[in-house]
Image (cartoon, rainbow, N blue to C red):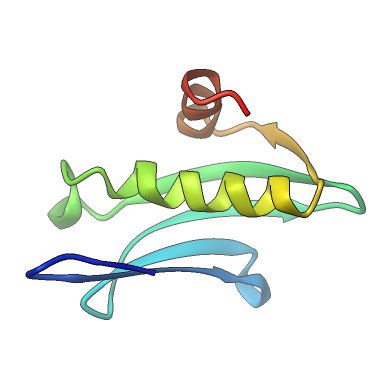
Length: 92
């Protein structure tokens, strides 16, 4: 979880919904859908609600999700173009 002076940002893995979520001041701002396999995670879709666009929230969300997946030694399969581009720019 990260906080700024004027807004509270929370990122979490909602396993029951198979997605990571980013919330700003409690409001759902974006999500990253995934399919979890035995030893891999497939990111299928990432979106940010229009009213939260342009704040870098999708990048924060994907950074959290990819870091979490890597910490669990999951192979990352980026079907989502945004996740694919983020990984290419941030190899780890």
